[in-house]
Image (cartoon, rainbow, N blue to C red):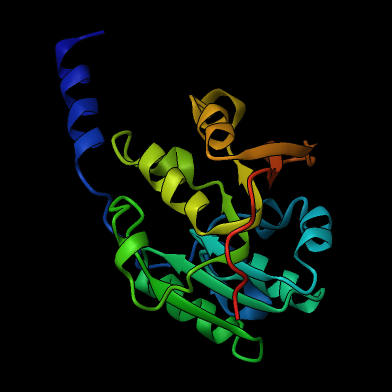
Length: 205
């Protein structure tokens, strides 16, 4: 590999990405003008809805809140979405204005924020990390994953391209979770659903 290419990759691996100022998903009927098909975000929602019913849900990298919106309408008790883009969080608040949900800006490349943020609940019944892990800086990925798992009482849903899994399954197992469902929704990345083996964290109020 040429030296210039290696240096560019090194810089990209150390620099925090700039938060987007536009929507990610294109859903004109909801006023979203992004460039990605929302069905990729929602792929596998039926399985997630079974696990999320009557439970609290934390969605890391929630974008415009489409997955939380669907899960809440299918019976989830309460939702909380985090994203590094203030624009997308504003869209999520508008899209989910009638749902029992809140949305906050958080930079997941700074995993310590998952400890310090005062707006987070101590724990959530379900935690979603869908298509986020591979976009985090290499130095932040596993720390963010461990912090996310620490907030999870029972169900952890993880989506990432197979070639970008790296050591994530091992980290998840080491934090006391076992794989209970593995889905390959058409047109989307593999969806892995884990359940906590160890004694559950205190229930959310």
